[in-house]
Length: 254
Image 1 (spheres, rainbow, N blue to C red):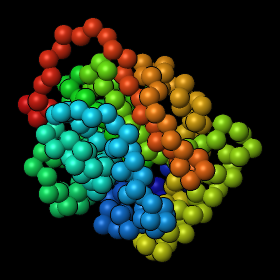
Image 2: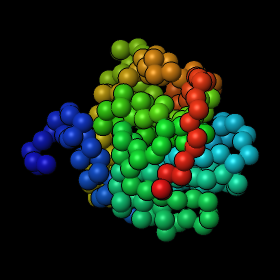
Image 3: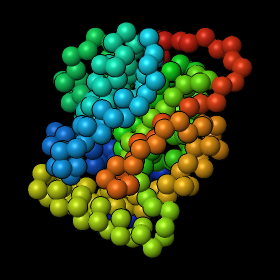
């Protein structure tokens, strides 16, 4: 990627955004957890626990954690569903390597998948999670279509991410604050303003009302919502509408 590209130009197409994300998260993988703890003022892990706590109680579900990074949500799923199977997926091998080193759960596996092209059978998953995932999707519609495809009818998807106000006058303030806050902590932790990307990625993301409308248009119904930090972030849990299906669940590694 040419170094002369500005940040908005670097993620203006799906191909550029995919390449930018892979490069960014490769560079920050080792210090990623330290950076996210700092940027969230120590609340990041608590929010992820809230995300998983909002999911239904199931005896032995198949779970997919999208953009799993270093595995925080993946491991929370394993704790909640000790008899289930949990697959953490991420675009970046460097992040997955950190997650594998941290893993102490026998029911957890990791695989390098693009969330827009998951290598999983249709209807395999009971649960799909994404922490800071949808905002980073190269094509949001493709990611939602894949989530819908891999979920079985009645399955749940849960997302934790930054939330853009539907009030147009507030949006530049939100994205500007995120840009400078992320850039500051990028300099502190990595020596580079890597996380200034947060502001631009949110600028290109649907506002909170448009996101809900999009989820409905893809066949999901909202089950739970919780704003965090006065609405700067939010947790959303949706359910795939039930439909007649004779699909048998398959093993994703076959």
